[in-house]
Length: 197
Image (cartoon, rainbow, N blue to C red; front, side, top):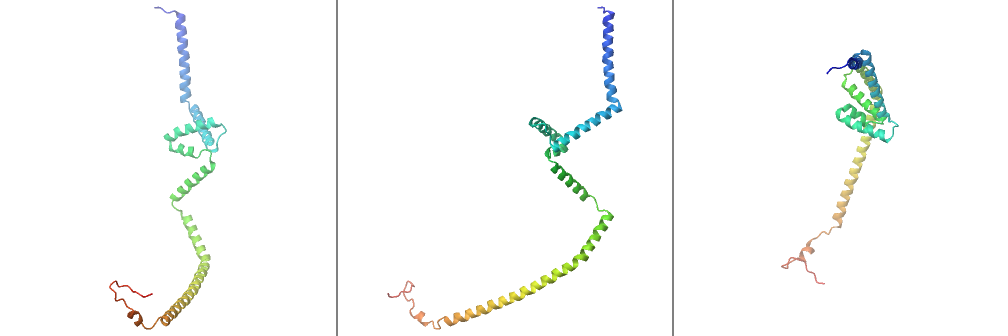
């Protein structure tokens, strides 16, 4: 039942060592410098991982397969990481996505007073320099319209005179008497014309 003092001393020494390790771990967890160091290393790791996904890595097929498997599992948990996975190894796609996001954000922001004034000045300059071009285009369109109207009128007159000539020709060529057609007649019961051959 009794324990020797040596066993008790060893047990106390082990307990002290365990407590020392626990205190060191606890101090490491709550120390502000250790917290900052852990956060910095985590951010560096994420940035390196994102860079590898976007630019591609030289790990080979196994590494990219593992990255893809990791990407699939993280895509279900985070929509932002799903976008990263879709553009993996494609810096051009990343640039286009960033440009589109910037354009969308810029479109949602209201125009500033300076931008509105600049747009108005641009409109005034465009009207000032563009008005002569517009006037020339209108006059050219009117000239073309008048020429087309004249040509259409001439063509209509030609068609009209041609139609009148055709009517006159048909009248001249048509037989004037229709008595010969009615005398050869159709007096039979069947109603058909019979000619002797």
